[in-house]
Length: 133
Picture 1: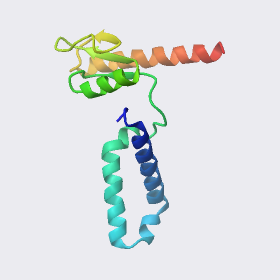
Picture 2: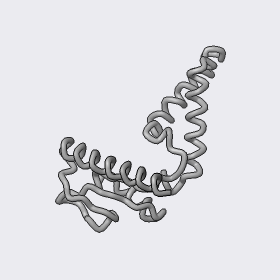
Picture 3: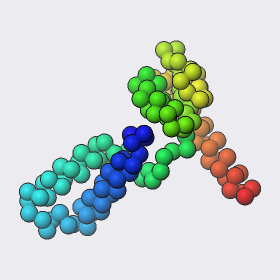
Picture 4: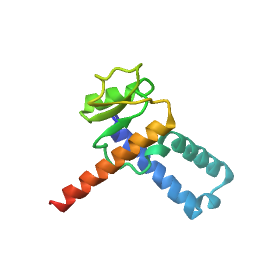
């Protein structure tokens, strides 16, 4: 997804346009067959791109929770030079990520705690950066 950003970006634009048309009620004015095709297309785009629908450019940093499951994302980030933070369990390789955090990546409470701390630190760093500009 990240290495094919130009294609992903056009698909995201198409997804946003279809959602806007559906919300405005333009699907009701179309024949049933055409409306069904567009709804099916919208459903497919929602399934694949729903998590990144507000993304307008490549991310500055990527946080990976399950290194084994998201190995392709780690590899794409390495190719593009995007820094990665990864929660590393005993079954993971800490050398794959730029910053490795030792944690249990199976427990929701540890994931929530670490993500809250990361979000707080990132937002604090951004506010300091904006203040000092």
